Picture 1 (tube, rainbow, N blue to C red):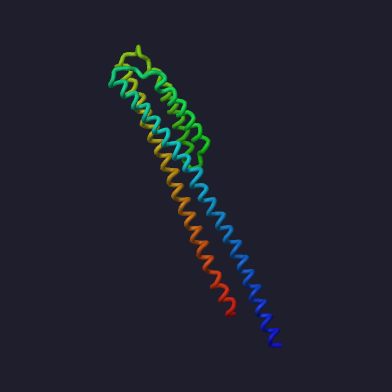
Picture 2: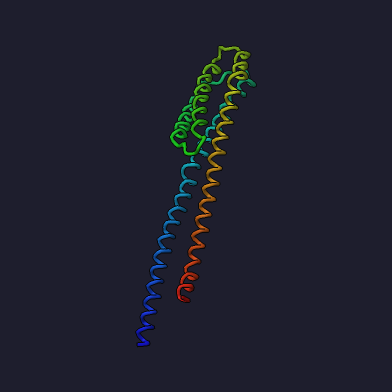
Length: 197
């Protein structure tokens, strides 16, 4: 009779342990899925926008540098010098418009899109060899440079938004990992507590 009681207690304890492990396992799998989703946001959506903004900034710097050199050398930029840059700018910004993921990003991205169109439309005027250098310089000072600076300011804001979102997603992922760690550590404590009762 006593042997039957011990066996019954063992089976109950074992059953409780199996249920506890299954429950914790299910919770852990959910936590791992959340962790994976947070990391996916970090690697995919936000990082891509940061890379695009940096690429656009680099292209603008290159075009702007070419314009400034043309004033220094007293020659107009050749069409071929900026046509490839224009293609790259358009392709990059089209990709950014399809990758908007953060609150506040869409308004800035659409504003950059409008400003880039204005900027690109002015390039042929600055590349006209027949246009007097003073006219070209005035056009640059009054219209091109302000556009250049505003676009760069906005792309900087878009980068900052996405970088902050990456930091937030990283923090969420760390919290999920810590929660998972605590729950795993609770398994032996819970089992010991159940056995004591």
